[in-house]
Length: 167
Image 1 (tube, rainbow, N blue to C red):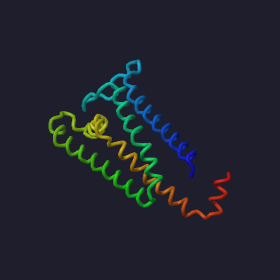
Image 2 (tube, rainbow, N blue to C red):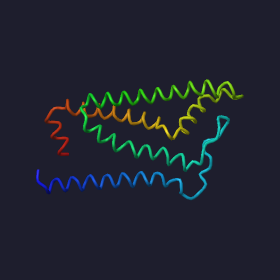
Image 3 (cartoon, rainbow, N blue to C red):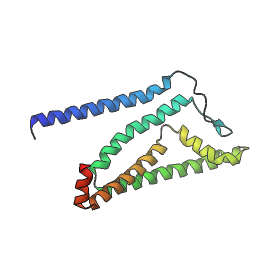
Image 4 (cartoon, rainbow, N blue to C red):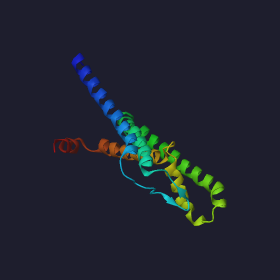
Protein backbone atom coordinates (compact mmCIF):
# COMPACT_ATOMS: atom_id res chain seq x y z
CA UNK A 1 0.00 0.00 0.00
CA UNK A 2 1.44 3.34 -0.98
CA UNK A 3 0.96 6.74 0.59
CA UNK A 4 -1.21 7.63 -2.41
CA UNK A 5 -3.59 4.75 -1.56
CA UNK A 6 -3.81 5.81 2.10
CA UNK A 7 -4.59 9.42 1.12
CA UNK A 8 -7.37 8.27 -1.21
CA UNK A 9 -8.91 6.09 1.48
CA UNK A 10 -8.71 8.89 4.04
CA UNK A 11 -10.33 11.30 1.60
CA UNK A 12 -13.10 8.79 0.86
CA UNK A 13 -13.82 8.27 4.56
CA UNK A 14 -13.68 12.01 5.20
CA UNK A 15 -16.23 12.60 2.45
CA UNK A 16 -18.48 9.82 3.75
CA UNK A 17 -18.35 11.21 7.30
CA UNK A 18 -19.10 14.71 6.02
CA UNK A 19 -22.10 13.36 4.07
CA UNK A 20 -23.24 11.48 7.16
CA UNK A 21 -22.98 14.64 9.27
CA UNK A 22 -24.90 16.55 6.60
CA UNK A 23 -27.58 13.86 6.65
CA UNK A 24 -27.88 14.14 10.44
CA UNK A 25 -28.11 17.93 10.21
CA UNK A 26 -30.65 17.70 7.39
CA UNK A 27 -32.78 15.22 9.34
CA UNK A 28 -33.05 17.64 12.24
CA UNK A 29 -33.81 20.56 9.91
CA UNK A 30 -37.05 18.84 8.87
CA UNK A 31 -38.60 20.56 11.89
CA UNK A 32 -38.28 23.86 10.04
CA UNK A 33 -40.04 22.82 6.85
CA UNK A 34 -42.91 25.17 6.05
CA UNK A 35 -46.47 24.04 6.23
CA UNK A 36 -48.76 22.65 8.81
CA UNK A 37 -48.39 18.88 8.83
CA UNK A 38 -50.84 18.92 11.72
CA UNK A 39 -51.13 16.56 14.63
CA UNK A 40 -51.24 13.35 12.62
CA UNK A 41 -51.22 11.28 15.79
CA UNK A 42 -54.21 12.24 17.94
CA UNK A 43 -56.98 10.26 19.54
CA UNK A 44 -58.30 9.03 22.86
CA UNK A 45 -54.79 7.69 23.56
CA UNK A 46 -53.34 11.23 23.49
CA UNK A 47 -51.91 13.82 21.13
CA UNK A 48 -48.36 14.06 19.95
CA UNK A 49 -46.07 16.93 19.02
CA UNK A 50 -45.94 18.55 15.60
CA UNK A 51 -45.44 15.87 12.98
CA UNK A 52 -42.31 17.58 11.59
CA UNK A 53 -40.57 17.23 14.97
CA UNK A 54 -41.52 13.58 15.29
CA UNK A 55 -40.36 12.72 11.78
CA UNK A 56 -37.10 14.63 12.30
CA UNK A 57 -36.26 12.76 15.51
CA UNK A 58 -36.98 9.31 14.10
CA UNK A 59 -35.15 10.06 10.85
CA UNK A 60 -32.16 11.32 12.85
CA UNK A 61 -31.91 7.94 14.61
CA UNK A 62 -32.09 6.11 11.26
CA UNK A 63 -29.42 8.30 9.67
CA UNK A 64 -27.26 7.86 12.79
CA UNK A 65 -27.52 4.08 13.01
CA UNK A 66 -27.77 2.78 9.44
CA UNK A 67 -24.28 3.75 8.18
CA UNK A 68 -22.71 2.29 11.30
CA UNK A 69 -24.84 -0.80 10.80
CA UNK A 70 -23.68 -1.19 7.22
CA UNK A 71 -20.00 -0.93 8.21
CA UNK A 72 -20.38 -3.32 11.16
CA UNK A 73 -22.50 -5.70 9.12
CA UNK A 74 -19.72 -5.95 6.56
CA UNK A 75 -16.75 -6.03 8.96
CA UNK A 76 -17.87 -8.75 11.37
CA UNK A 77 -17.99 -12.46 10.73
CA UNK A 78 -21.37 -13.79 9.58
CA UNK A 79 -22.06 -15.53 12.89
CA UNK A 80 -21.33 -12.32 14.81
CA UNK A 81 -23.57 -10.28 12.50
CA UNK A 82 -26.41 -12.76 13.07
CA UNK A 83 -25.80 -12.67 16.84
CA UNK A 84 -25.81 -8.85 16.84
CA UNK A 85 -29.05 -8.88 14.87
CA UNK A 86 -30.67 -11.32 17.26
CA UNK A 87 -29.56 -9.26 20.26
CA UNK A 88 -30.86 -6.02 18.73
CA UNK A 89 -34.22 -7.58 17.83
CA UNK A 90 -34.42 -9.01 21.35
CA UNK A 91 -33.62 -5.65 22.92
CA UNK A 92 -36.25 -3.96 20.76
CA UNK A 93 -38.82 -6.61 21.65
CA UNK A 94 -38.04 -6.22 25.36
CA UNK A 95 -38.47 -2.44 25.02
CA UNK A 96 -41.88 -2.94 23.37
CA UNK A 97 -42.89 -5.32 26.17
CA UNK A 98 -41.69 -2.82 28.79
CA UNK A 99 -43.78 -0.07 27.16
CA UNK A 100 -46.81 -2.38 27.03
CA UNK A 101 -46.45 -3.30 30.71
CA UNK A 102 -45.93 0.33 31.75
CA UNK A 103 -48.96 1.52 29.77
CA UNK A 104 -50.98 -1.40 31.12
CA UNK A 105 -50.18 -0.36 34.68
CA UNK A 106 -50.48 3.43 34.28
CA UNK A 107 -52.74 4.31 31.36
CA UNK A 108 -55.12 1.37 31.13
CA UNK A 109 -56.70 1.68 34.61
CA UNK A 110 -57.20 5.45 34.16
CA UNK A 111 -58.77 5.49 30.70
CA UNK A 112 -62.42 5.23 29.73
CA UNK A 113 -61.27 3.73 26.37
CA UNK A 114 -59.39 0.47 27.08
CA UNK A 115 -60.11 -0.67 23.51
CA UNK A 116 -57.37 1.74 22.36
CA UNK A 117 -54.64 -0.02 24.37
CA UNK A 118 -52.81 -1.21 21.23
CA UNK A 119 -52.86 2.28 19.72
CA UNK A 120 -51.63 3.71 23.02
CA UNK A 121 -48.63 1.37 22.96
CA UNK A 122 -47.79 2.36 19.37
CA UNK A 123 -48.34 6.02 20.26
CA UNK A 124 -45.97 5.78 23.23
CA UNK A 125 -43.29 4.07 21.14
CA UNK A 126 -43.61 6.77 18.49
CA UNK A 127 -43.33 9.49 21.15
CA UNK A 128 -40.23 7.96 22.76
CA UNK A 129 -37.83 9.79 20.48
CA UNK A 130 -35.05 9.54 23.08
CA UNK A 131 -35.10 5.75 22.81
CA UNK A 132 -34.80 4.33 19.28
CA UNK A 133 -37.03 1.29 19.76
CA UNK A 134 -38.26 0.99 16.17
CA UNK A 135 -34.82 1.78 14.78
CA UNK A 136 -33.22 -0.89 17.00
CA UNK A 137 -35.69 -3.47 15.70
CA UNK A 138 -35.01 -2.41 12.09
CA UNK A 139 -31.24 -2.54 12.55
CA UNK A 140 -31.50 -5.99 14.12
CA UNK A 141 -33.60 -7.24 11.22
CA UNK A 142 -31.10 -5.67 8.79
CA UNK A 143 -28.21 -7.49 10.50
CA UNK A 144 -30.03 -10.82 10.38
CA UNK A 145 -30.86 -10.35 6.69
CA UNK A 146 -27.28 -9.28 5.95
CA UNK A 147 -25.94 -12.40 7.66
CA UNK A 148 -28.26 -14.62 5.61
CA UNK A 149 -27.21 -12.97 2.32
CA UNK A 150 -23.51 -13.19 3.17
CA UNK A 151 -23.90 -16.83 4.22
CA UNK A 152 -25.64 -17.74 0.94
CA UNK A 153 -22.92 -16.02 -1.07
CA UNK A 154 -20.18 -17.89 0.79
CA UNK A 155 -21.92 -21.22 0.03
CA UNK A 156 -22.32 -20.34 -3.66
CA UNK A 157 -20.01 -22.29 -6.02
CA UNK A 158 -17.08 -20.27 -7.34
CA UNK A 159 -18.25 -20.56 -10.97
CA UNK A 160 -21.62 -18.95 -10.13
CA UNK A 161 -19.92 -16.16 -8.17
CA UNK A 162 -17.65 -15.39 -11.12
CA UNK A 163 -20.58 -15.37 -13.57
CA UNK A 164 -22.66 -13.20 -11.22
CA UNK A 165 -19.75 -10.80 -10.82
CA UNK A 166 -19.30 -10.43 -14.59
CA UNK A 167 -22.97 -9.83 -15.44
